Amino acid sequence: MSLIDFIYQDILTALFIALWIMLPAYIPNSAAAVFGGGRPIDSGKNYSDGRRLFGDGKTWRGLIGGIFCGIIIGLIQIYLQGVFDFQIHTVLSVVLLSAGALLGDLVKSFFKRRLNKKSGEEWLIADQYDLVAGAMVLLLIFDFQWLTVYITPVVFIWILIATPLLHRITNIAGYMIGVKDVPW
Image (cartoon, rainbow, N blue to C red; front, top):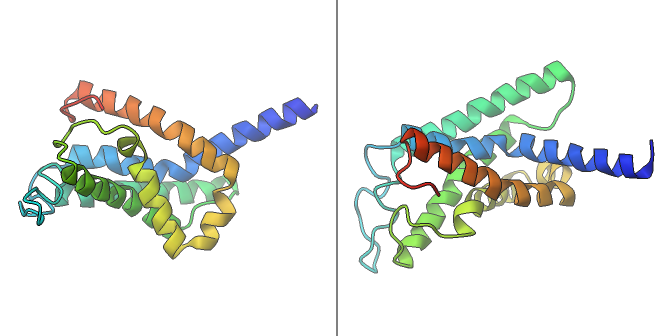
């Protein structure tokens, strides 16, 4: 195997690992849109600036349903890791990635309201990376060792590249099937 082949194979392996790692974080946002509706997390309350804390689009049903779906996907991954004899995810990493994705989305929504942006209004960069930031912060706080072992610089770069692409694709699909009001 030539050096070029080795590097190419290593880059593709890092892409696979990045997608595998982030799957429990990618699923909750889509699942939250499907399960959403019902009582808003902020119960219709406003912040001191007179604007809603999060808005009607952030509901308990979406939050719980999204995190649940992320955890289920992660548990399936853990099972498959045993079948194929490789270990990346743990129950803790799956829970932190799933919950972190939607907590990151909530934090973004809070700041979006402070900037007087409407619910559903596009906010470039923040809309694409809120789930990554939330997931990474929870991992940093609660599972630092796992984070430093599996989120290598190359894997992190792939996460940064893949996330906005997947975000756009899933949002367009969600819009086309009617679970999202806007394609972003």
